[in-house]
Length: 64
Image (cartoon, rainbow, N blue to C red; front, side):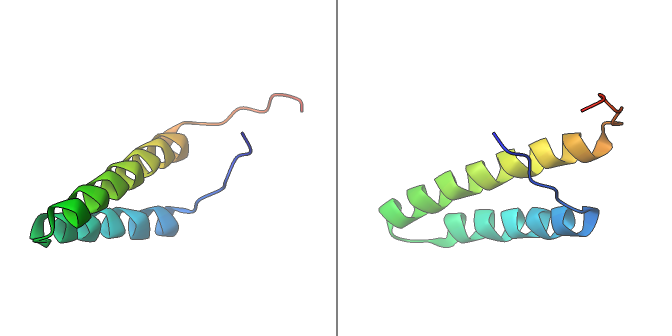
C-alpha cells in the first residue's frame, strides 16, 4: 500500500474532524444515518491513530 504523508497540522485538523463527526453521529435522529456516520467516524479515528503513531515514531533510513 502506498504511503501518504500527513503533516502535524493536517493531523490536528483530522482529529478535530473526528470529534465533529462523532458529535454529528450522536445527534442524528435517523438510526441508519447515525450508524453510517458512526462507521465513518471509526474509520477516521483509525486513520488518525495510525497517523499519530507514524508521526511520533522516529524514522531510520533503510537504504531504499
